[in-house]
Length: 119
Length: 412
Image (cartoon, rainbow over all chains, first blue to last red; front, side, top):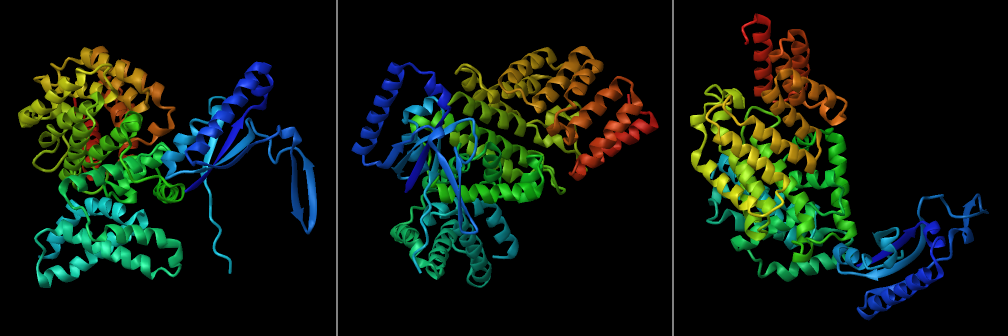
């Protein structure tokens, strides 16, 4: 099965880090991705720029409406995602528990939904 | 084989059949349908053709075939190619050895108690799927509305299917952390059998026996201190069951029980498990409750019970799991040491808990303490409240008797 692991943390926690701590965290994330890829578990994934770089859009009556910022103000912000290959939820959770920011914030693990076959 | 026999088979084996069908068919709802189909087929065939030598194996094979047929009948076959492949793969050699069937029940329990499900859903689902209780019975056991409960079960099953919660017993590394919820569920199962919350039958022997069997199975597979503690607890409580109901089928409280009716052999078994549980420290919540049950088992009478010891055990228990129900039981024990007024004060302090406001035993305990403290009018109000909340016929009659005794002034 495919699972997405959505990485959330308070951006303030990152802003409060020293440069060394931030560097170490990034290196740890790189190793995590390498590890997952070596085991054939990493299908895709990216870290994201902070939410103040986000633009949210909606289409209403054919018109594209845009607003500055994330779709919702939340305590923790979406910081990245992993697309994982796992046998079942147990394995997905076990893999996600090694994502370094799990110690700082939260990882939401969700199975992907396959769209129905094309008509 | 007549209808009654089939009912017995259903009661004894339907959960085992279901647990194994979930493994063979890979899906809860499909397995439940297949289970019903298998029993429908049995109702049709057994009376004319005679019951098979091994009804359990017959039902599993029949259910498996019906399940595979069902998968084939589904219009969107391509979505279910995986299920069909899995079902076909095992169909030639279904493993129906007793040990495998027991493992299936464990698989089912651990799946229902998966931490990815809300704790309430774990409890509800296990009582529904593993014990085969109706949604209404589960709702009462968990102090919830049946509609809420039914939604919870549907959502939980959907999550198991869609999120890919595996049908397996966790490996050694994750076993300990997964065990707590399982023990909680087994204990609820026992209680549901020991003090049924509806209908006339006060003690359902097959449910308590099932809970004890599962606790024993857990003790064999997972030799953890609190697994032993749970087994000790259910044994010690089960040992008192003959004294819990009188010859008219009426409820008898611990205070009035004829202790010669207690099953000494089972008390011995319970205490032996308790010793094993206490050998592993720190003592878990079930071990402490078993120690309380053992203190009652050792007492020659209600008055000669070591209440001080019991209060001490409740203190430890409350430190571990500060729930209103434990606080309620502790208050009753405190009342035995310090007098009814002390118990009343503790219970009045608990009355703001929502979960306890609609719990009939809380109001019954409060009424009892008011009565002992000489507050007749408050006792009457509390007994009436308990009566309006109780759903079990014996409990209702017991509370009515108390009210009558209160009115006639002959209760001292």
